[in-house]
Amino acid sequence: MKLNKETFKEYKQYPEKVLQFGEGNFLRAFVDWQIDKMNKEAGFNGSVVVVQPIEFGMVDKLNEQDGLYTLYLQGIKDGKAVKEHEVINSISRGINPYTQYDEYLKVAENPELRFIISNTTEAGIAFDENDKLEDRPQKTFPGKLTALLYNRFKAFDGAKEKGLIIIPCELIEKNGEKLKAIVLKFAELWNLGQGFVNWINEANTFCGSLVDRIVPGYPRDTIKEITEELGYEDNLVNVGEQFHLWVIEGPSWIGNEFPVAKANLNTIFVEDMTPYRTRKVRILNGAHTSLVPVSYLYGLETVGESVDHEVIGEFIKGVVYGEIIPTLDLPQEELEYFAGAVLERFQNPFVNHYLMSIALNSMSKFETRDLPSLLEYINRKEQLPKKLVFSLAALIEFYKGKRGEEAIALADDADILDLYKNAWGSCDGTEAGLRQVVTTVLGYEKNWKMNLNEVKGLTDAVTYYLGKIETLGIKEALKEVM
Image (cartoon, rainbow, N blue to C red; front, side, top):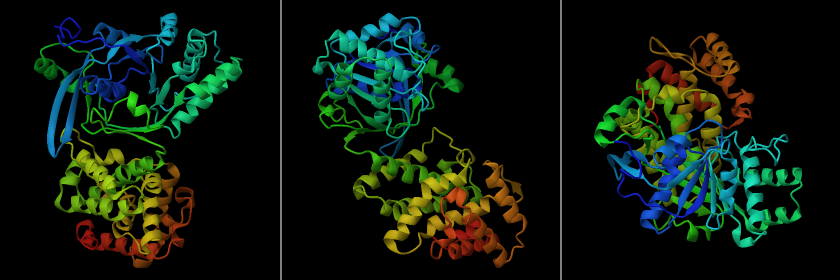
């Protein structure tokens, strides 16, 4: 038995209020799931028309199943490991603009259409001067979007109430601003007129957004067992974690039309999402990066076992709550809630997140994710954050390339690997020798964008901890900062 509207007895049809560029795992586990919840719990009463942004994609599979698919959410929920699934009934149909271009443009003529959402990868929001209005379709996503908006502008004679709310989810900074700028660039290139430009500026709302949910996607390894469990065949089974966060930078009135709050979703509307982006990078990514060298040298292999470990678990909590959160400006309660959710995500028993998979390019990661917290902590507290400094010392030890007798498969840019090879190669193991290693690494301005030896007390502290790690081993050395 295959999943479709004939076999899914609870199937419902809703007005097409959302046009979505992208049919991949992430949007189906994130946006379309939220719309399904809003339909069931908040009276949104809307469905999604999915547009395949590239020539070869999955809309045929979607249409074969009438837009239905099963979503498994698995991870920590309310402190417990939870695995649950449901059929998502928010997609009405899929369109391939490469074979159904007229059908694609016709969506713009639907008076009930209100939202456009996209996730076309980071490379998707791009301008190509070779795109033409006459193309069927245009090569780029912004080109396709401009053609669609122009068709809507003409269909409704520029009526301001027929403008749209556009929310890109691509993982680039200022995604909404950049998308709007390219649309306006196409309007100029294609000579679409000042009236259309005014309509874009006055009738349409381009929002920035930040998305966060880990979506492993189609469970190839366990699909046989899942099919037996479900009792039907579903070629679009999707797997995501329990946690989700969507920060939308736009006017709060959008929440009246997109009732995420009524559906108790972790989606918020803000005037400026910069602090939320900073929060994610500093807490989630920063915790990962500061954890890796300490935990791996300790003998652990995954993020999950690290957070569950009696010593390493306390270490990373100390980093997050004691040294990262005090450097951020959002409300304390909000930061602590987010940090708790992050640590729960790290403990997800359904995902084996290997430390070595995070270790790639650890030097540049420490610079973007952890160094800002370290420097801001000094700025605010006028003292060094001991655990972050210890993590930096452990990172230098990690790049020595050995865990006991076992070689570490270091993965970084050639200049970084050469830097460490030369620094450690000339070290005689004395305190003076270790200080020279530390001085060399902290002075590598190409990575740090500054000379860290100029930070008061940092060279001494890193040298001290590195000496402890070298002479006592990571387990004994860690007691110094716990």
